[in-house]
Image (tube, rainbow, N blue to C red):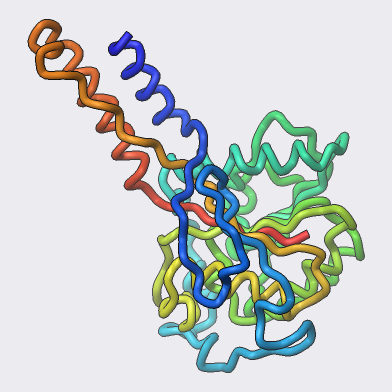
Length: 294
């Protein structure tokens, strides 16, 4: 039984089983409850922000970057690499599948903003148009999940007028929201082209190109970054709901078998070490956060 329990722990760690989010403290948001057994961190209401929709509290200094050169130079050469680890990718794809399935549509039209050569979309979903907007032609051409793509520097031209109102069921952005220097205009456009009942999913981790991230992002912790993205939604348009989520599932360390049992059966000790190592690797990997707008 002990051996089977350890084997189950190894499988769970490798497959990212049930989520566990530790309670967090959010300054000035005591009314928000954070479930210990849910990946939902909190929801944001209009009263959580100093201004109302249409206001804009951020200055040029807040959105300044260490490297303000044109981004087309930085992204000129393709990068066929993943910017988050395997555990974060697995968590993201599983989260997408859950969200996409909940939309209950025969086919989904998806816009992948700041797209590249891979979009991490689940395969067991029926798609209509899957459009990528990104910086590098070679990366976008290599993305097999896209049906169409546009090379566009959103920091120079945040206008998405190539898309009609209510064009997409899902708008996603993976680990690039921190690079946007015109977030107000982009989030306004997102709201315009998202269909009623659709979802916008802005995801980020702790990996980034520090020279290209905006100043206030570099100065914030995870809760601060969630709040920044939530504020983009709040100030840009009348979103129905804004929710912050932690989608990287944490696993509890397996209980070490008693020494006497290990002495009788040394393979128990090896199994425990393997399971504990798998859990530790998963838990120490890249975190993955989402701010969801509906």
